[in-house]
Length: 310
Image 1 (tube, rainbow, N blue to C red):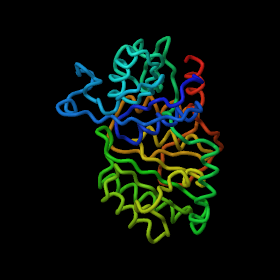
Image 2: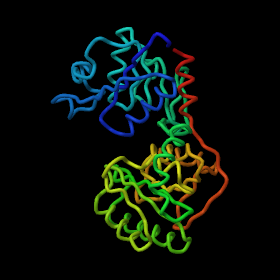
Image 3: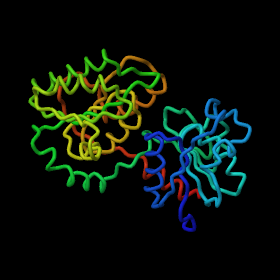
Image 4: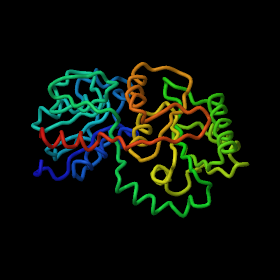
């Protein structure tokens, strides 16, 4: 792959997908070019697997000249990659493509995808951009900002409704009460970063609950402190809905707890169980706890496999 200078990362305009592609490329030592898929009408209303001409549906994203390698993330990208491979490109699909894996040079799937094959590499966690060097750099950037907050420091990463789990007012109110109780009983600092998916009403509930305890809730002003929080936290709490955020948290040196949410998804249980069996993560029950852990990060192994095969 040394002759490939600028591979494409192809995905929809979703932060979780973008992070997985960038994490894989960066771990492989590549400098990628991001190509976001924005299908034109009527294709934006039709599942990509039914597109008669995927390249025409996303023409702006796949305009020539074509690189030697494309990394795709998500189902829409899979439909596009399968066609690009016919143009003598090497293609690597991240996540289950929902089609024959043989149409790709390599498929990198998570355990919960339950996908196997001679060209399938299985990871325990989602791919991401968290590395020891990035955490060290972010710790230096954010250390003074978070210095006023009580230690031990608990970082809380909020997701949102995703069709399978709900982080609505009721669930957000319960989480807000649990975080406030933990701050009071266990004498810990609590810092929170919502995501773009987080209902503002939920963010307000948590901000109000933590205010008497000196908590911090990011207000989307300035740089997102999430990597700094991951680097400096003594415990990380992540809402259950996000495989990506739980995976990022598990790559740190801090214990990780997931905050249960209403809803159900069988595949999500398949993702959580191995991490719980290894005692890398535990459910959050409103109290601070710490235990001995080691970083869990399969992105470097996936990148090494990609380089080996291609």
